[in-house]
Image 1 (cartoon, rainbow, N blue to C red):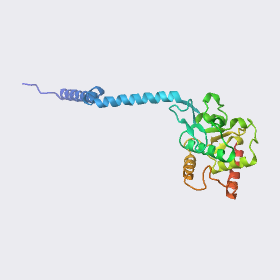
Image 2 (tube, rainbow, N blue to C red; image 1 turned 90 degrees about the vertical axis):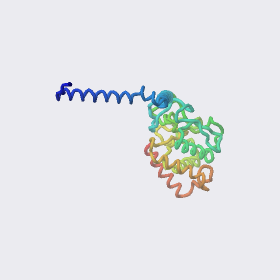
Image 3 (tube, rainbow, N blue to C red; image 1 turned 180 degrees about the vertical axis):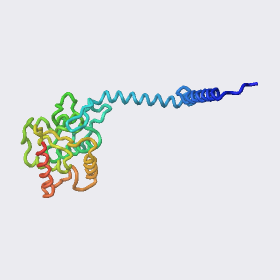
Image 4 (cartoon, rainbow, N blue to C red; image 1 turned 60 degrees about the vertical axis):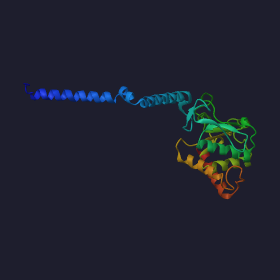
Length: 254
């Protein structure tokens, strides 16, 4: 005859059974048991690990963690798993290393208008885009080249730290380009330490004005009389007024 369980013994036995059930459920849900039941889960885990390792290696290879003067991250390399690649400027002989996406659309537009309306660009030597971080001065706007957000157009033709390298008609075009882009791009000729060859994005990453300007440029391709090489009348009163206002603003904040 089995002796009746005391209340204390019953509680101990229930606790023991519950603990055993918990251990069992953890075992069933563990990696070894799960992979034995579903080999595909093990493959998935390995694929995730490989992807994470590739991402780590890419970041180590590309990223600096240091922003250029306009707030975009400078990258160690171009054309090699980062955001900066060599891109063509249609209608010109130029290919330039710039940040892909909206920045590319905007800076390529600047290059094309310069080519059509300011001075003909003859070869890739006439435009310098990305530069390695160690070759730029981080406290100057030239550092923006290291983040793929700036280009120098005919850098050897305009004296460093000097103004007045363009004829008045050429500068009218430059001012019109800047106004057309609503100040998204800044001209190095307006900086305290001028570089008249330099054009760069003057917004931080994520600014909605960047997407707006890129969208407008893409739309101009299908609009007669708009866009690079379309014969825009830069002397129209409306365009001149807008260009003058922006020039005053950007010079003030040089």
